[in-house]
Length: 136
Image 1 (cartoon, rainbow, N blue to C red):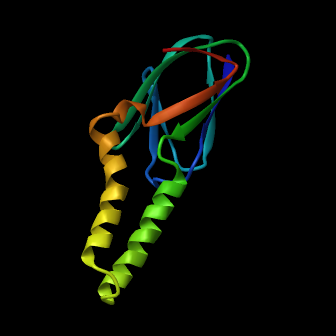
Image 2: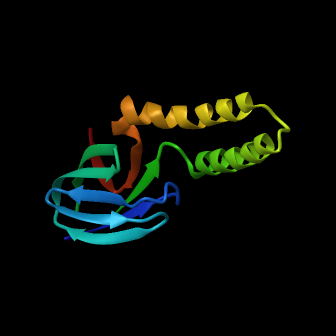
Image 3: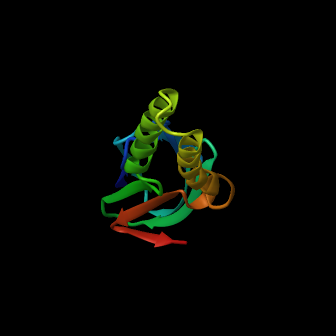
């Protein structure tokens, strides 16, 4: 049996990430890690959160392994988008700036998410492996 450690990097989005390994599944929250025991062999990993889903096949050897799961859009993207939206909303409410500025900001914040929702939904999650043979 090999110990396989999953690490989810990043807190945002706040939703749980469901990881399925063949027929078993578990959830990871932001910045959480989980260790599971698996025998050597080929496994299909499915990572899913809402509409984002990535599937990868890897071969696990007898050594301990670590899988770092990353999101394509980093935490800084979400923090910047939310803070910028709040500031621009307040300035628009006070009539200091026009509505076109907040509309442009919201579009710039939403468009990358729409891109990953409709076009590249299978590449939103990436993972780096240590001591694991990765097959694509």
